[in-house]
Length: 238
Image (tube, rainbow, N blue to C red; front, side, top):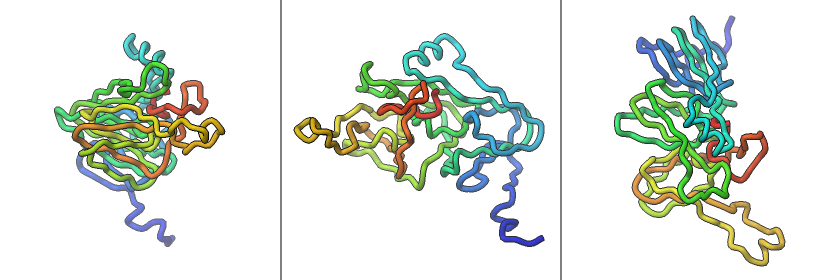
């Protein structure tokens, strides 16, 4: 049987070291030897002895945060030995290595998988205020790898001046940056007549670091499954 489908580029990527790596630009491979965390529903194939356990919010602290954000945490724990292949609607996959002392803020909708050695917490975006719903992100710390997804090829902006990004296009950023929300539309006659720019709010970044921006906007999701203007956590924390 002959076909370009069976070319070397499409064959399974082998390695002698366990852990996560790119199978290709749209798919992540985890050579599992222990535990890892992944987005619920992201598994497209696996080989070997692997167990999948759906995780709830877990613990009083996370329960209170779930109530505050209106979001849960649809993560699953992978346990065992084998190869697990993950994807998320053919989005581009990128692997980031975190070193001790690093802290990375990530839009929850962009998280695909991460090593069980990493820690994460839910944080409110500075300046969002209690009146705004869904304006949260997750901060990862520790030593290990995390896989994030983007809709298309992203741009990495060096924040050395005030920077503004559409909340749904922000993928991840340096946790040391100061974040807030900036009203982009100016209230005037056009706004009162229903004419707006379509960019009512932008996220603001200040300090020194980077912001990764994708060339597409994630559809904002509320905990009830309805669309909303906020939703920095997107699909992960629901």
